[in-house]
Length: 473
Image 1 (cartoon, one colour):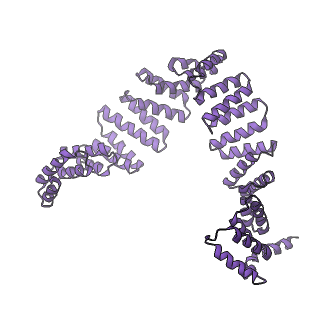
Image 2 (tube, rainbow, N blue to C red; image 1 turned 60 degrees about the vertical axis):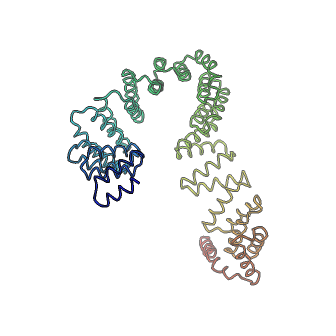
Image 3 (cartoon, helix red, strand yellow; image 1 turned 90 degrees about the horizontal axis):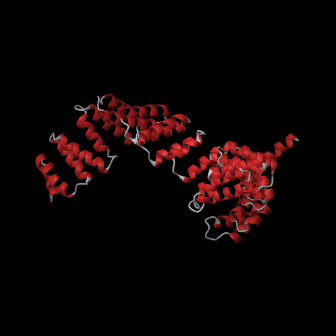
């Protein structure tokens, strides 16, 4: 009954007694956030700020995004410790995703850190993180370098610095940073393998063996340095161990490409693709191999796929257009190109390719539907209906298409076709359809009169188009 007793004491203004009762409950429920908040509140009322701080810190250990704890800690330190005050205020703004405000707070915290190197390095690390979140790489780098002026014991600082240099394509600085990390004792796999990759990128493969123990990385270095016989032997030794690792097949493809055995190179890429489907490297390697084979079509096709996977849609479109100029009967490529053009806002150009696709695949439902919608939106209802009737040949129970053809027929005053397709709809669509009764009524009106009531208005656009067409002749 301690909680109820504590609440009664608190309601009566007996805060010492309430505090004592809450502490009894806390002994049994040390992870109760609401209880911790109540203890912190009463400790503040009783001017027991050291104890209040403990409760609020405990709250943050259970919930690092608790705004109440940060607000109360700010109140505790606003007049006594500016460094801690700004740190807690910065954290408060961070959890609110107010990063500009948080940045300002931590800058003030740094200014109030005095000579405490641990405090300075902690705040500088947070500032670096905030600058990264705000996309300011240069300032993030400056802050991480300041951390290293005071503290060499945080491996994460070296990795973040290296990643920022890599992002900004400053490979030399990234290498220097990781070499410095190793000298400071961080000879971990993460550091060494990242450094090995950078050596390869920087065309110094001879240095890889000094830092990497990874068999596949070492084979990559052999290939890069031209030690092809050694690389082939190593690939043979690694075959069984890494048979389910796509990287092995990328290396095999590179070996065969270098030795101009292009068929085996393509086989290796195929195995790589099985293990890592849609990886950009699949298409890049194939493109390079086909270029070496003077196969311009497949080279352009794979450069298109490579750029598509990487999100370079404009370049992908150009590559697919180049491929089309060489070979115009690849339905899959034409479908991809039509879809890309449509998504890029080039609707008219896209429809040209959907038309080409229909010529290759007369029953392509997607292309027929898109062409029908396109011509309907352009006022050519007869052509829109024609594409839908071709769709019905491929999908004989498409009652939505039947209904649409009937509606389009009315727009061009083709009463007989409207009746025909409304009847087909009623023969095909489930009677539970919400439109079934409506179609029955429409059909009855059409069959009971020479001219449907809505034909005159529906045919207005057709008359206007016809008038202007004659005027141009």
